[in-house]
Image 1 (spheres, rainbow, N blue to C red):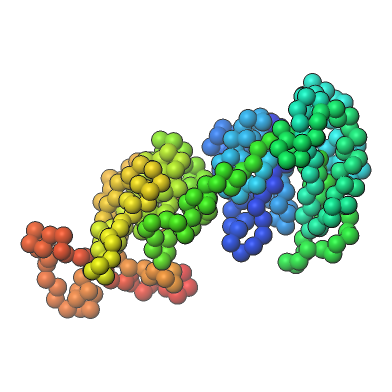
Image 2: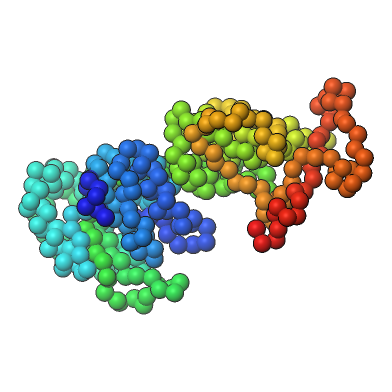
Length: 364
C-alpha cells in the first residue's frame, strides 16, 4: 500500500473509546482532511489498521502538511515524527539509535539546542512513576546535551506502548507491549485548541431537542472537506448546528427547513424571549447564513451542481418523524381549502403531514 504513496511516515494518536467518542469516524476524517490539504490520498489503509488501538501510521507528504492535518482533525489527539518503533522497547531503542546516527543534521537542534521532555503513555496499561522512569531511561542515553524542561519544553518526545484491548476490557497489567514507538510530537489536534468547549451546546444561546453536538458537527464538516470559500447546504437545517461548524471553517452557508415556527422564532410562551438560529452565528462572530423556509419534498432549486458540500442530519428518527408540507384535511380524504397567503401573511403557519407508509417503513 505505502509503495504507491510518497511522503513521510507519522504516528497518529487518535481519540478512542467510549460510546460518545465517534471513533467510527476517525479513519474517514483523517483521509478526508489529508486529501483536502493536498496530501496523496488515502494516507492510511482502513482495511489494514488495528481498529482496537488508538495508534495508526499515516504517510503524509511533509511535516508542515502533517501539522495542518492534525490541527483540523477532531479525532486526533496529536501527531508524531517516528524515530524508532518495534515490537518491544529494545527494538524501538535500537531503531532510534540508528535514526539519530543517520539523521544528525535533522535531530541536532532537538537533541542539543532546544529544551525537551520525554513522556510515557501506555494503551492498555497504566504506568507508575517508577515504571515510567524505567521505560524512558534507555532513551535518555541517545546522546542528549539539551536541557530538560518538564513544564514547558520546546520539544516533547513520547514513548508509546500498545498493550492491546480485548472484549471491551484492557488486558491485565504486567503484559509486555506488542508495539512500541519513540517519537517527537509534531502537533496537537483540534481538541487542544479549545474549539469544542467554545461551541458546546451547553453554552449555545439557541438550541433544540435534536441539535447536533459540536463534536459531531465538526466531524461532518471535515468529512465534507469544508474550507474557506466553500458553499455548504443543509437541507434539514433545524437550529443550524452543522452550519455553525461549516461557517467556522469559512464556508458560505445555505439552509432549508419546513419548520416555519422554528425558523421564524415563534414561541409558545408569551413572556419568553424570542431567539432564532441567527443568534448563534452572532454569538460566535460568524457569517450569517442564508435560510429558506421550504420542503425538500418540493425542492425549489435549479437542477445543476451549485454547492461544494451537502451536510445534513435527516430528521427521520424517534424524536423527529418523517413529515412533509401538506394539507391535513386532504391527507384525511377531506376537501381542503386553498390558503390566501396575501390575506394571512406571517400569521399563516403551513401544516405538515406524514410521508406515505410505504416510503418510510418500520424496517427503513
